[in-house]
Image 1 (tube, rainbow, N blue to C red):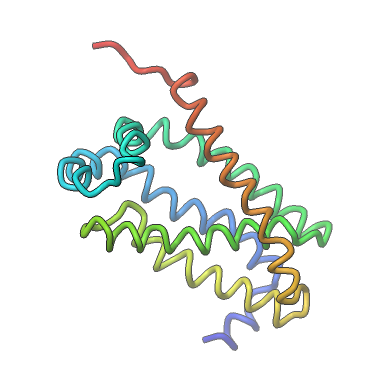
Image 2 (cartoon, rainbow, N blue to C red):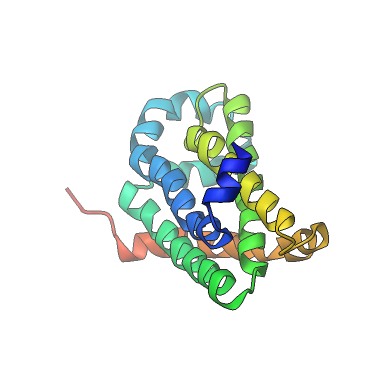
Length: 181
Protein backbone atom coordinates (compact mmCIF):
# COMPACT_ATOMS: atom_id res chain seq x y z
CA UNK A 1 0.00 0.00 0.00
CA UNK A 2 2.78 2.44 0.90
CA UNK A 3 4.53 1.71 -2.36
CA UNK A 4 1.36 2.44 -4.32
CA UNK A 5 0.76 5.70 -2.42
CA UNK A 6 4.37 6.78 -2.84
CA UNK A 7 4.23 6.08 -6.58
CA UNK A 8 0.83 7.63 -7.25
CA UNK A 9 0.73 10.64 -4.92
CA UNK A 10 3.16 13.51 -5.29
CA UNK A 11 4.22 15.21 -2.08
CA UNK A 12 2.33 18.27 -3.29
CA UNK A 13 -0.87 16.23 -3.48
CA UNK A 14 -0.26 14.79 -0.02
CA UNK A 15 0.16 18.30 1.38
CA UNK A 16 -2.95 19.61 -0.40
CA UNK A 17 -4.91 16.74 1.16
CA UNK A 18 -4.31 18.35 4.56
CA UNK A 19 -7.16 20.90 4.37
CA UNK A 20 -9.45 18.21 2.94
CA UNK A 21 -8.74 15.68 5.70
CA UNK A 22 -9.24 18.44 8.28
CA UNK A 23 -12.63 19.28 6.75
CA UNK A 24 -13.77 15.67 6.67
CA UNK A 25 -12.98 15.37 10.38
CA UNK A 26 -14.62 18.64 11.31
CA UNK A 27 -17.69 17.95 9.17
CA UNK A 28 -18.44 15.08 11.55
CA UNK A 29 -18.30 17.52 14.45
CA UNK A 30 -20.33 20.22 12.69
CA UNK A 31 -23.05 17.86 11.50
CA UNK A 32 -23.49 16.05 14.80
CA UNK A 33 -22.63 18.66 17.48
CA UNK A 34 -26.21 19.59 18.33
CA UNK A 35 -27.58 16.04 18.28
CA UNK A 36 -24.60 14.74 20.27
CA UNK A 37 -25.17 17.23 23.09
CA UNK A 38 -28.94 16.56 23.11
CA UNK A 39 -28.33 12.84 23.40
CA UNK A 40 -25.32 12.81 25.73
CA UNK A 41 -25.45 15.96 27.87
CA UNK A 42 -27.22 14.47 30.92
CA UNK A 43 -24.95 11.42 30.97
CA UNK A 44 -21.68 13.22 30.31
CA UNK A 45 -22.10 16.31 32.54
CA UNK A 46 -21.93 14.06 35.61
CA UNK A 47 -18.40 13.00 34.63
CA UNK A 48 -17.08 16.44 33.63
CA UNK A 49 -14.63 17.75 36.24
CA UNK A 50 -15.98 20.78 38.11
CA UNK A 51 -13.32 23.12 36.71
CA UNK A 52 -14.37 22.22 33.15
CA UNK A 53 -18.13 22.33 33.60
CA UNK A 54 -18.47 25.95 32.51
CA UNK A 55 -16.65 25.22 29.26
CA UNK A 56 -18.71 22.06 28.69
CA UNK A 57 -21.94 23.94 29.46
CA UNK A 58 -21.01 26.67 26.97
CA UNK A 59 -20.16 24.12 24.28
CA UNK A 60 -23.48 22.36 24.87
CA UNK A 61 -25.25 25.43 23.47
CA UNK A 62 -23.10 25.57 20.33
CA UNK A 63 -25.03 25.28 17.11
CA UNK A 64 -23.66 23.74 13.95
CA UNK A 65 -23.50 27.21 12.40
CA UNK A 66 -21.53 28.63 15.33
CA UNK A 67 -19.22 25.62 15.36
CA UNK A 68 -18.51 26.33 11.69
CA UNK A 69 -16.93 29.73 12.41
CA UNK A 70 -13.70 28.42 14.01
CA UNK A 71 -13.62 25.65 11.40
CA UNK A 72 -13.65 28.21 8.58
CA UNK A 73 -10.86 30.18 10.26
CA UNK A 74 -8.80 27.02 10.63
CA UNK A 75 -9.48 26.02 7.04
CA UNK A 76 -8.24 29.38 5.76
CA UNK A 77 -5.11 29.01 7.87
CA UNK A 78 -4.55 25.44 6.66
CA UNK A 79 -4.98 26.41 3.00
CA UNK A 80 -2.39 29.16 3.45
CA UNK A 81 -0.04 26.69 5.14
CA UNK A 82 -0.49 24.16 2.32
CA UNK A 83 0.12 26.86 -0.27
CA UNK A 84 3.32 28.00 1.48
CA UNK A 85 4.56 24.41 1.66
CA UNK A 86 3.78 23.51 -1.95
CA UNK A 87 4.61 26.78 -3.68
CA UNK A 88 7.31 28.27 -1.45
CA UNK A 89 8.75 25.12 0.19
CA UNK A 90 8.02 26.60 3.63
CA UNK A 91 6.92 23.50 5.50
CA UNK A 92 6.95 24.74 9.09
CA UNK A 93 3.27 25.64 9.38
CA UNK A 94 2.06 22.43 7.74
CA UNK A 95 4.28 20.41 10.06
CA UNK A 96 3.25 22.30 13.20
CA UNK A 97 -0.45 22.28 12.40
CA UNK A 98 -0.34 18.56 11.67
CA UNK A 99 1.52 17.78 14.89
CA UNK A 100 -1.29 19.47 16.81
CA UNK A 101 -4.02 17.84 14.71
CA UNK A 102 -2.43 14.43 15.25
CA UNK A 103 -2.18 14.97 19.01
CA UNK A 104 -5.77 16.24 18.99
CA UNK A 105 -6.87 12.73 17.97
CA UNK A 106 -5.90 11.51 21.41
CA UNK A 107 -8.21 14.03 23.07
CA UNK A 108 -11.11 12.44 21.17
CA UNK A 109 -10.02 8.96 22.21
CA UNK A 110 -9.48 10.11 25.80
CA UNK A 111 -12.91 11.72 25.92
CA UNK A 112 -14.55 8.54 24.65
CA UNK A 113 -12.82 6.50 27.33
CA UNK A 114 -13.35 9.03 30.11
CA UNK A 115 -17.01 9.72 29.34
CA UNK A 116 -17.70 6.09 28.40
CA UNK A 117 -19.49 7.12 25.23
CA UNK A 118 -18.72 7.93 21.63
CA UNK A 119 -17.02 11.32 21.67
CA UNK A 120 -17.88 13.73 18.92
CA UNK A 121 -15.31 13.38 16.13
CA UNK A 122 -13.57 10.23 17.33
CA UNK A 123 -14.52 8.20 14.25
CA UNK A 124 -13.01 10.52 11.68
CA UNK A 125 -10.09 11.26 13.99
CA UNK A 126 -9.15 7.58 13.99
CA UNK A 127 -10.15 6.71 10.41
CA UNK A 128 -8.93 9.83 8.61
CA UNK A 129 -6.67 12.05 10.74
CA UNK A 130 -4.37 9.34 12.12
CA UNK A 131 -3.63 7.62 8.79
CA UNK A 132 -3.23 10.93 6.97
CA UNK A 133 -0.93 12.44 9.61
CA UNK A 134 1.24 9.35 9.83
CA UNK A 135 1.53 9.19 6.05
CA UNK A 136 2.27 12.92 5.74
CA UNK A 137 5.09 12.70 8.29
CA UNK A 138 6.37 9.49 6.72
CA UNK A 139 6.49 11.12 3.26
CA UNK A 140 8.07 14.34 4.46
CA UNK A 141 10.75 12.32 6.27
CA UNK A 142 11.13 9.72 3.49
CA UNK A 143 11.51 12.37 0.80
CA UNK A 144 14.03 14.14 3.07
CA UNK A 145 12.02 17.36 3.06
CA UNK A 146 12.16 17.51 6.86
CA UNK A 147 13.84 15.58 9.65
CA UNK A 148 12.75 14.71 13.19
CA UNK A 149 14.36 17.90 14.49
CA UNK A 150 12.15 19.93 12.12
CA UNK A 151 9.06 18.23 13.54
CA UNK A 152 10.04 19.19 17.07
CA UNK A 153 11.07 22.75 16.14
CA UNK A 154 7.91 23.42 14.14
CA UNK A 155 5.45 21.77 16.54
CA UNK A 156 4.83 25.06 18.41
CA UNK A 157 3.21 26.48 15.26
CA UNK A 158 0.35 24.16 16.14
CA UNK A 159 -0.44 26.45 19.05
CA UNK A 160 -1.64 29.02 16.50
CA UNK A 161 -4.49 26.61 15.78
CA UNK A 162 -5.60 26.70 19.42
CA UNK A 163 -5.56 30.50 19.38
CA UNK A 164 -7.61 30.60 16.15
CA UNK A 165 -10.16 28.10 17.50
CA UNK A 166 -10.60 30.12 20.70
CA UNK A 167 -11.09 33.32 18.70
CA UNK A 168 -13.57 31.53 16.43
CA UNK A 169 -15.64 30.23 19.34
CA UNK A 170 -15.56 33.69 20.97
CA UNK A 171 -16.73 35.59 17.89
CA UNK A 172 -19.26 32.98 16.69
CA UNK A 173 -22.06 34.10 19.07
CA UNK A 174 -21.46 37.72 18.02
CA UNK A 175 -21.63 36.82 14.32
CA UNK A 176 -24.55 34.43 14.79
CA UNK A 177 -26.62 35.63 17.77
CA UNK A 178 -29.37 33.42 19.15
CA UNK A 179 -32.75 33.90 17.57
CA UNK A 180 -35.44 34.76 20.12
CA UNK A 181 -38.50 32.52 19.81
